Image 1: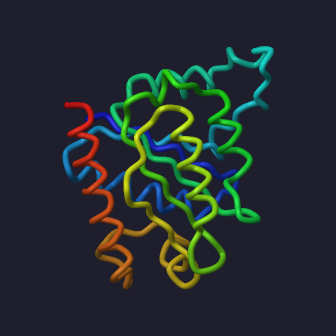
Image 2: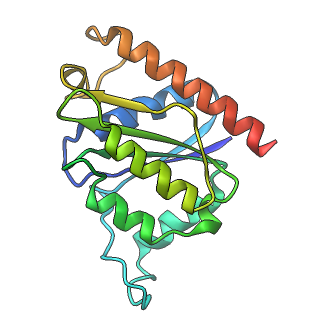
Amino acid sequence: MNIMIIAGSNHKAATSTRLAEYVRDVIAAEGHQVTLFDLYRKPLPFYSPDGEYGSTEAIKELQQGMHAADAVILATPEYHSGISGVLKNALDHLGQDHFRGKAVLSMSSAGGSVGVSSLTQLQTIVRNLHGINSPEWISIGGAQRNWFSEPHTDNEGAGGEILERIKRVTRSFLDLAVRVRG
């Protein structure tokens, strides 16, 4: 399977991006190909329905990666009970042909306990793009975010219960992706 992860923050040390990196490593360890498209490192111009910015290298790379993907993961910080503006902008540069019939896992990092509002918004967007939402999502918040404040491996620190949940949900998502893509 070829999995595309879009890390939807424009903050250099975003915990949502650290979460995406951790999930990338879990997926790679399961033997799948995985690409992380980090919107902090590859910012996109504002979407315009006129298409005047549709030919930048970053947009082409994102669109080509999405076409090649068998499944998708969207990671966002939760800002004011919603997804980040940079992730919404990236999704506006994409269409149904990038999501149709693909399993999609939504993930968030919230300052509070969980990022339910952003996850609900992501699932609504995915439905409108004809993607197939994973029945579970991943959200880290509060003290859980502390473990993701720096890049880690499983052998460092005490990620504990949240790391096991992330692995379980990621494997469940991969099972869904395999079933959907046949």
